Image (cartoon, rainbow, N blue to C red; front, side, top):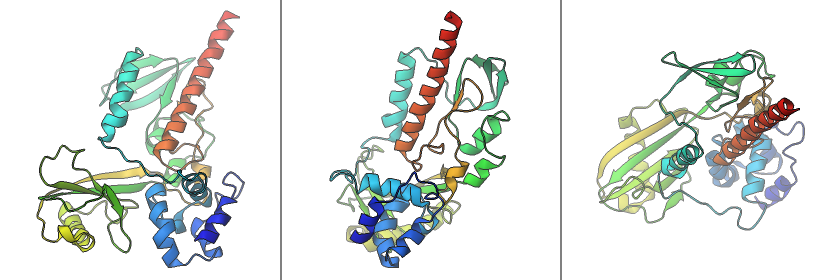
Length: 323
């Protein structure tokens, strides 16, 4: 593994052709057997990339491992949220927008996006329309392709379908006692991938909530809760001795059917840039051409790029009007 890590440091993730190669094939070329892949490369890669090495672009895998393991000594430190992600991202973001004079409307589905001369019209499900000088379209790729006007991106029709999507399933087991002593652990040779203590995050006062985060969940996303429980409760007991005598009081499951794009070799060809061919229209999302996989870091980078694009365009229009 160390020899492969040294070689991986030298991979140019931005070089033409790197994205077209499979990370799994590259690992095989560097003497990584199935055990090494399962115990290290997929342990990290599946969680970060939502795909096993055999189905992952070498460029995206190299980006993850170079940043997380091969840059600085503390680059691999793991952080996790002690509050629900809505409190971490959604609420502060909404507060910042409101403080800046924006109107935040939630639960408002967009039905159409129309280019009217130099302005845009955003049509909602109830038929009302809002005009704007600029639009940042930050929706999943298939919805983005449906809403984008023809010619907005330089990709052949069907690009979102070719980019694909991978589900993530989170199974929460509510035990009558503490069974997991660590804040989180990873498992090998088990249907359990990563386990997190989410007791405080859900406000549980007695017992413990153990959340199982299951990436690449194509085979699990449609299973009923009872089937998931039958599969995973014994698997947790096999890993945690304290869980063997504990009682599971409740189980709840969250499913993200299109949690990330599929980071397959060649996927870069199906990721549009933040800027579009139409003035005042930008795209944002971890699925855009950030050079990063579908992570929160990639999403932030895309948002900053999209914001810069529309602000720069607005500044040019203002300067032109003054001239």
